Amino acid sequence: MMILWLFFLNVVGSVQWLREIKKRFGNLKRMESETETSLSSQSSGISEFSDEDVSLMELGSGNYGCSHYRRRCKIRAPCCSEIFDCRHCHNEAKNSMEIDPLEQHDLPRHEVEKVICSLCSTEQHVQQYCISCGVCMGKYFCAICKFFDDDTSKIQYHCDECGICRTGGKENFFHCTKCECCISKLMEDGHHCVERAMHHDCPVCFEFLFDTLKGITILRCGHTIHHECVEEMKKHFRYSCPICSKSICDMSLVWAKLDQVIASTPMPEIYRNKMVWILCNDCGANSHLPFHVVAHKCLSCNSYNTRQIQGDPTASCTSRVAEPRW
Image 1 (tube, rainbow, N blue to C red):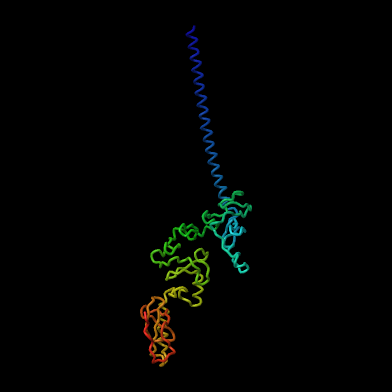
Image 2 (cartoon, one colour; image 1 turned 60 degrees about the vertical axis):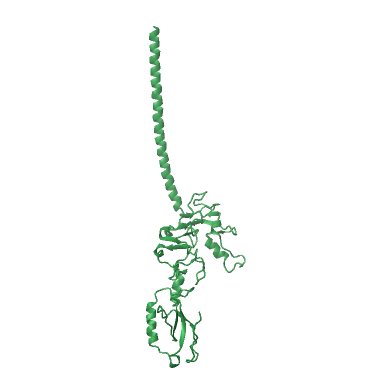
């Protein structure tokens, strides 16, 4: 009888053990199901966040900003604590003729600490997304320059060597260590280096070139100038560099035309034996040649971009010009 009772207890224990195993297995299956559901929910949440992020990226895009940049925020100037659309708006306002010259100043871009969202007017530390409404304040954002811009067609990039953001695509430019500026890769093998080539004012309009918003042209001599200023010079028939006086383009056709003009314009008898010394602005050579009222041709490179350095054409024809002393 005792043996049967022990056998019965063992059977009951085995059944309970099996039930416990089944229960735990069921819980495990339930946990796996809940985990899959959770992962699915999380995946859906990521998708929804991505869609929301895209929406915030586009919300108000192109509707805010100034004449310089399209952006959805304003900046608080660290120098005067006033609010402006961008640093250029600040500089234009603070350097106008109405401002006392002693109070005129530029905004130090890297020192900007506060921005104001254009949609909700929340003032906050510099960041791409508003902490209040979540809107993207600029599709292109540089935390170093504190720079925002919604117009990404400019292909902006930050140059560590220049220390500022530039446009045109980083893959299309290289930084010249001697010129200390970014230059098109199309000129990498042939550009003429000039130390700190863009760290000066434009020789025509006197705007600082290094961080200008206008297009810049690098002349054959290596000096830099605004492209629109070059075009303006051409309208007034100015084809030499305002800094070094070298020709800014191929002038061979003009020189050929001057050859014809000089050949058809003989000098009066009183000037035919008059000799002058000239300096060529293009090659730097000196030449000693007959005086002509139209132009003087360099005997070294055939350029007419020259200047008279010795010899007085109004002096007596019998007088001699002293040889230059070097």
